[in-house]
Structures are given as C-alpha cells and as structure tokens.
Amino acid sequence: MDRRHFIALGIASLAATPLHASYRATIYTPGMIGDLSQTRQTAILNFNATWSLTCKIKREIIADIKAANPDYARYITFVDIDWDTYGPSQMAQRLRVERRSTLIARRGEDELGRIVAELDPARIQLFLQDTLDAARRG
Image (cartoon, rainbow, N blue to C red; front, side, top):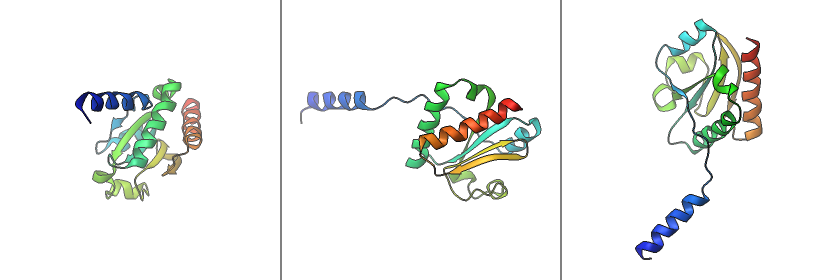
C-alpha cells in the first residue's frame, strides 16, 4: 500500500467514525464526596478505568445524553473516580463499589440509585433522568 492510499484510507475511516459529544466530568480528589455530601449537591460518581472498553462506551453514551439536555450539567455534578487508584480504597468499600463501570447517584448522604456495567443507552438514560428529576426536586 502506498503512502497516498494509506492516508486516504485513514481519512475515510475517521469520516466513518461516529462523533460523540465531549464527555466532561470533575476528577475525584480525596475528600470530595464528603464536601458534596455537606452541600447536598446531587452527584453521579463514575467509577471507571481508562483502559476499559465498557467504561469508554459508557462515557460516550453519557456524553450524548448530556449534550441533548443542558439541565444535566446545571443540576448534577459528574465525578470521575479512577478505578485503578481508588477501587481498593476505603471510600470505595464504604460505598460498596465492587467493580469498575459503576455509576452511583447521590445527594447528601443518600444514594439515589446505582447501575453497574450497564451499556444499554435506554437504561443509562433512565438512570440519568431519575437522578435529574431528584435533583430538580431538591
């Protein structure tokens, strides 16, 4: 394969790749969950790993859902928690997180819901919508 053919093939494959909205979240730092609990802010904790295909797909689904409704960014704080760093931590044990690709919705000390290793966009949408509805109610 010559260089021009290789470049043309690369450009064609990029054009065929679906573009997703940009996934944005706050990166977890120790003590953050306590701070969020004190303010009673609604948050979704995303325990994920950069190397995990399941986590990557889940982030893309969440980005698309958030892009369709700006209220998600307005009412919910999305927090990414690196599984490789914090998976074995006491914080993860207190929250009963047993594996990566876990989403936990919280407000204050209350858990609003959780899903684990879910890739069905409709179920993720329902989880996010339920969390948004709870956040709007305050």
